[in-house]
Image (cartoon, rainbow, N blue to C red; front, side):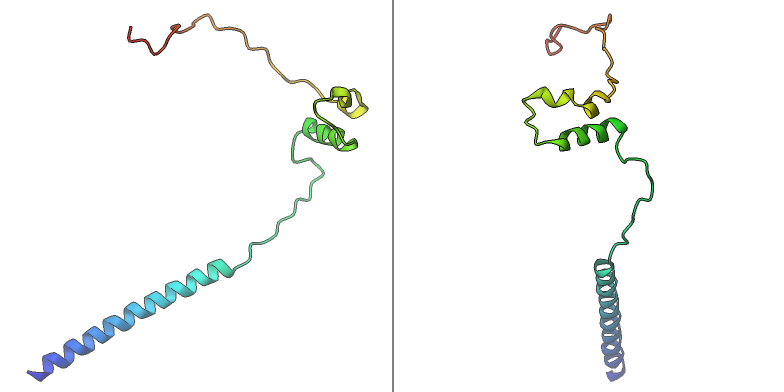
Length: 104
């Protein structure tokens, strides 16, 4: 009767050791993910990140200390190089109901 007791003790110890190894492995893996430094990437292009209008606007804004309520900065040389890409949206012929939340 003592043989099954020894086997169950060894079996439970073996299971505990396996679970402990898995837990420690997971902790080590998590630590290596957190402590790994992200690589630093640099952009080696001469093309601006934003469109040309955005870079021109930023240059125009950085020329002087500008108060945006005062629009006189838009008469500068750089600000005049900006292009207008806006589109006029015409009213649609297929207009919906006046009150879309009414039951009828």
